[in-house]
Image (cartoon, rainbow, N blue to C red; front, side, top):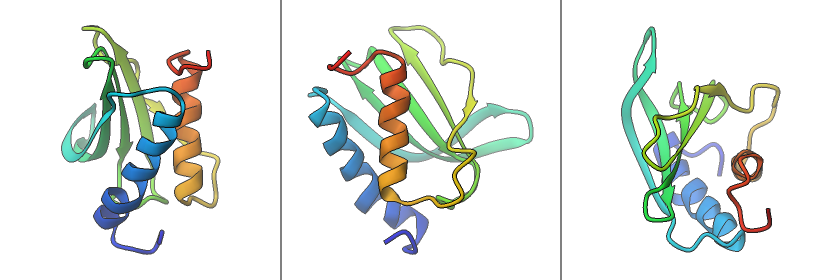
Length: 120
């Protein structure tokens, strides 16, 4: 499935799997959106990104795909309440192999690092 066209993979596989994983972590009102939007980094006008929101929009994260390829460079940021997003961080930079399970696992792990999931 990772060889499918990028938008198809994100919409048909990554978003549903991520939603299921986060629901299992206790998040009930998760909204996920896949879109191209601006990225506040010099040299990159816009990129594909998955935006997740829950807790009435008070918790938000972005997974940025700097290339329309799951194996390409990725970045991550988060914000709580009305605060501006965190510093944009590299995401999954050491992974040579990228697949659906790893994308979901690293996203959940990153959110867990913020102590945002129910088991914390």
